[in-house]
Image 1 (cartoon, each protein chain N blue to C red):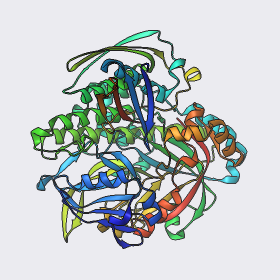
Image 2 (tube, chains in turn brown, red):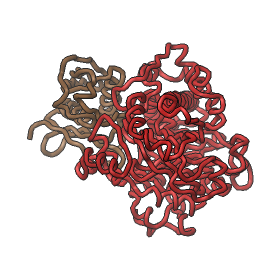
Image 3 (tube, each protein chain N blue to C red):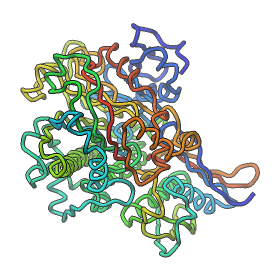
Image 4 (cartoon, each protein chain N blue to C red):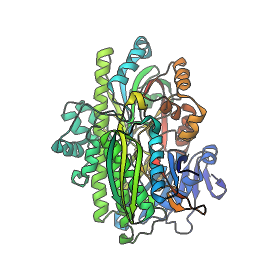
Length: 139
Length: 476
């Protein structure tokens, strides 16, 4: 199965899940799921690249730190991102997020993400060899 | 929720006795129907809260409770610093001091009716709402720190409001002991363009009419009668609060072992109140409370500008402003003696009873107004705090309807356009930048707010005063 993302149910908020052949790929897909909480990722044009870096003591902590770094860049730059490239080196993550300034008329943004939580948080490799990275985001 | 393990104390009060690592029992306030519909996670989380050091009395669950982060949304817990008590970033949440304020207008439905459409459009144009919207106010570093220390008091001093507003805001508009120096530059940067913005999700601004009065004496005390037009604003501390929640949640997770804390769930991240981290969080969290109070004050000013243009006869006096994601130091009588406690209310409203010294003289005979937001189609409630609530749940009540359905399920069930059209046929004008957002916030996606407030009243947490019905709804 190709790398992909999906949302999962949470009564008040939304779960984001990335599934890919690599851990970095799962992080990229989960970030696309984060964009999809806000709008259709296909409606976002990758005009500008933003560097993002973060660290954490373990995989799950790194995943939450990654999503929160994306949330922060979305908030302070008022951008939406259509494409992510992630490199993970031990406990360090370096990435670029490509996107454009929010255009309300074109993107119809639904909701603002406040932050990534530790609820239903999981990063791991399944028996099928695919990596899954997931958590619930507060909206 | 499986209610077989609960002891029923009366119709709307239940208890899960101590067992295992629990230091106190869990007390739940709901009728049987609400309790059966409540997700099991809410009880599991309340049990975990009951295991935290220094918790006093009980871990309380309000009638609108649901699965949250560490603490249930609709959770109340108090901690004693002198007994090793903790403060929890998860126990306050990401949207610090999210809350509701209600304004009188002095208008009736008949006066509003000819201008309802124009008012809806003007409010939507004038109030920054939704992702990507920015306010007109930009604060430099000095002004930002002054805002974080001064709250609504600061906003009024800048000309965004009236001095009389302050006595009708919790903490009289200014949370003391805020420490802007403990708010990161990232959090301040995230707030840079967001002063005077409504936000998105379940945040809204509504023009409402008083549809029903339940307690004429209390309603008169609050200045409400059937047919009155009021304005209700629901929003919080915006990006600054979100960033503070994010940063301190991580720091508390990372530092837990150093404080000897074994967390059953990382979302229960906390620190001893007496620790440096605990004090830093309290200082930053209080600054975020002031940010929320200043933000709602600025939004009030913007609403007043719109009314002054379209309906100059209106006089928008503040009824009250409540915050429902906070940790506050309060004195409560426990086992016959007053104790100073750090009361966490996560999706719960403070509800001081009549005579409480915190209330202004005009409100003291009646108790604190408790503002309960419903969904955009079903209305909201004004309640009043009771004397009994002090002993029940540290003077706390519910905060809203609570979601009954996920956002994903809501968008599969309804189209935003259909919801907007159906509400318009019922005289409710909805303005929003996102049709999907309207679908996610569809009235049917929420629990029955009437059942929630009925249970709160039956449990003794608060008294029903009035029901208000939406006429205009601006959603982010």
